[in-house]
Length: 470
Image (cartoon, rainbow, N blue to C red; front, side, top):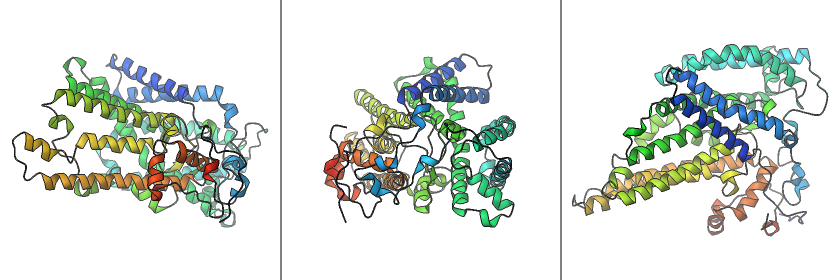
């Protein structure tokens, strides 16, 4: 394996989002939710849509005004030292989006084929929603009510948008066109890889958006109905905990709902392997409901709040730690702005907590679960309370092992995400920088098996060339 001479030190690449813009959207989201608390006459679904718009519209406007110049992608050759040698092992995403400089050149025939592809996609998704029993549950009622409002607007706006985008896309023969060509029987012109990526991207949206919208709607209802005068110390803990989840879900819903090239937050690629999909979707309903209680049930009725109830000072310490970890988790979601999505690449995020860790959301969330569940503490607490030392060790060991199994699932998710994103040379550059400067760099030095490995097989990057000051 040859070693390339350094062309320049590796530095942390520019993020696809700007944090102050994202925080502006969060401030507007929270302000809208607080105002709607004082307006009980506004229906819950209407309130949910207003809060979503309060987050999305400022981001759309500010990015359009201030970041248009940043939408020119960085060059793949700048990815790592000796970058030009990486071409062929990575994907050039510079041709995926809108060309903002050349004159528009739409094609009526191409536009028509794309609309056929769009309507075919929506018809297949509607059929799946109809025949899968899970989607008849009451949990998803708010989502169906939202669609009654959104579908007419979508049908009105989408043709105009498709016509506008067709004339400005660097690669106008996208997944919609290839699917439409397949429906029309143009088999010689169809690219199955394009259709597969198109199908995977829409599967991600169709799977996650109903679930996240339903959760977000429930959080809006709880936030509007919270009675501050009745909250004790633990009540305030869970209020702020749920507020963090509300912000997190708001970012997630907007990310799944708005996936368009106009906003530069389109899907560059979708995870193509089962090994990437399985550890991701297993963490969500209905799969977690089927497997979690049986194989991964690490929680008991004696969580941190009840275990530490006799020790109020320690209870406050744990509350601060848990809220801090969940704050990092929410901060990570905010960092994506309009671009949040599981199992897809929609731009490399290097700001916010991603400046310190490649996987801050997974790291903080998994740590919070240890503080919340305290699976190995119960024997000591019961023993000191005089309830006996026997009988709790086996349960504590089982809960600990089950929580470790959950941690393992998220570790696999992190590794498969790295593998997917590493087709983008900017992510390779980011990951190599994080290997030296991230808060988990010491773990990679101690345990070689967790060290980041670039996908290139014929290029060995000299790690000593990574700039320690960048």
